[in-house]
Amino acid sequence: MTQGKDGQDQDNETKQTPAQVDGRPKVLARWYWGTTGLLIVASLGVSAIAGRQIAEEVPEVQEPAEDSGGWADAAMRKAEKAAMEIMKEIDPALEDAFEPVYAGIPRYLDFHYSLKGEWLELSASVLGQMESQLDRQLFTGLESRIGTISQGLQTDFGRLWLASVEASLAEKPAVKGPFAELARQSVEDARNRIETTAVVFGGLGVGAAALAVVPRVVAGKLGQKIAGKVAVKTGARWATVVSGAGAGGVLCSWAGPAAAACAVAGGIVSWVGVDLAMIKLDEHVSRDEFQQELRALVDEQKAAVRTVLQGIVRERLYSAQVERKDVVMTISLDELPDYKRRMACEAVEEIAPHYARVIGSLNERSPAKVDALIDLLAQHEDSRLLAPWVDRVEASILNADLDVRLDGDLKIKVQVPQDLQNGQEMRAVLRMGDLEITSAWTEPNSYGNFVFHMPVEDKLPLLGHQRMRVNLSQDGGLRRWNRQFVGQASFLPHSILPDRPGLAVIGETGVATWATGKSGSAPRVWVEIPVSGALLEGVAPPEFCAI
Image 1: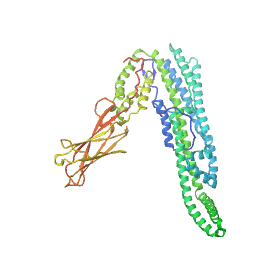
Image 2: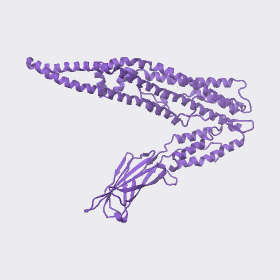
Image 3: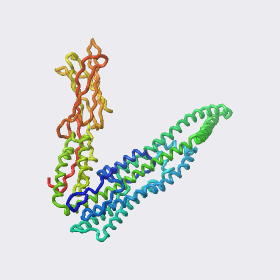
Image 4: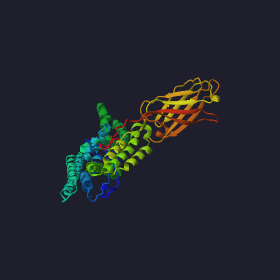
C-alpha cells in the first residue's frame, strides 16, 4: 500500500502466491536420482520453516510514490524483480551439471552387462552398497556441481538485488520529504543485511536431508531390481552347474583320486560359461529398455533438483520481502498520521482473540477455523504497519503442529437392553485406522452394562476422516450360542471435541450397533477418546500497539 495525498491507503500490491520454505540446507550427501514427489515435498518444506507463503517469482514493481515509505517499497520491489531474473540460469546450469551423468550411462551399461559388473553388482546388492557402486559409475562429482550451482544462484541473487538498490539510491532526487533521510538509511541498512546474509547450500536442513535420503531409497530399489535379475539367472546357473558337475563326474572318472577335483572344475567352467551366455542374452534383450529407464530416472532427478534450487531462490526472495516490509513499517511508523496507527492497532485487537483461541484450544484448530483466521490476517497483509506482524502470525500457524492426537486409553461404554442382559461376560474389539485393540472378557456392572478400557501406547495423530468399528461378543452361557454385535462410526477429529478450551480433552462419539445373523435389539455404544494437541508459541502484538 502507498499513502496518497488525501491520507487514504491505496492498495498497490497484488497478493503473492507462495511456495513454502522449510529450513536451510545441511551438507548434501551423495546425489543420485530420486523420485520427484519426495523432493517436491522437501522443496515445499523449505518454505514451511521460513514461515509463510511467499510471492510470485516476478514481484510487481510499484511506481515510486512521493512519500518516503512508498519510495522504499517501490525501490525494493524493483530489486526483487531484478534478482529473480536468476531463475533463468537454473536450466542451463543443470544441463551442464547432469551432462556427465547422461554421458556415463553407456559406460555403466557396458559395466552392468559384463561378467565383472554382474558379480560386483550382486556383491554390492547383498552388502547393501548399491548406492556407492552407482555413485562410482554415474554420479561422481554431481554433488559438487549442484552445490556450485546453488551457491552461484544465491550470490547472483544478492548481486542483482544490490545493484538495483544501488541504482535507486543513486537517483537524483531519489526521495523527497521530511523522512527522506530515514528512508535512505533504512534501505541502506537492508542492503547491508542482504549483502552479508547468504543461504548457503549446506544450510537447507530438511531439503538437504531429503536429498540425502532419496538417492539411497532409489538406489536400493534399483539394487533390488538388479539383484532380482541376477537371482533368476543364478537359479539357472545352479541347475547347469549341477548337471555340469554330474557330467564332469562321469567324464573325470578316469582321474582316480583327482576325479572329485576334476568334477568341481567342470562345474566352475559350466557356471562361468552359463553366466557369460546369460549376460549376453540379457544385454541383447533388455539393454535398450534399461538405458531408457536409466535416462528417465536421471530426468526425474534433474527435475527434482530444479525444484529444490527454485525453492532456494524463492527463500532468498522471501528474505528480501521480509526486509522490505520491515523497512516500510519502520518508515511508516514516523511518516503516517496517528489515525493510521490506531486503525492498525484496532485490526490487531480484532485478530488477537481468534489467534489466542487457536493457541490455547484444541477445538479452535479445525481446518475451517484456521482458514478463517488466515483469511482475516490476509485482509491486512498489505498494510504498511501490520505486514511484518501478519507474516509472523501466519508463520506461527502454518508451521505449527495442529494435529489432534490420541492421548490415553480409549473407553468403550456399552448399555445393554434389558432383554439382552444375561449376567454373562462380554468382550470388545475396536478397530480404527491401523489401531486394533481387543479387551479381556469382562463382567457386567451392577446395572448389567459394560465399560471396556482399551489401552493405547502411542500418541497417534488423527488425520482426516476417521472410521471406527466395534465388535462385541456376549457369552451365551451353557445353553446358548454367543451373541455377536457390530458397530460402526465415522467422524472428523474436531467434530468429537467438547466445546470448551484446553489442549487435553476427552472427545466422544456414538457407535451405531446392530446384531449379526438376525434382527433384534442391540446394545447402545459410545467411545470416549482422550486427545491432546501441541503447545504453540504465540507471536506478541506489534510493539506500537498496547492491548
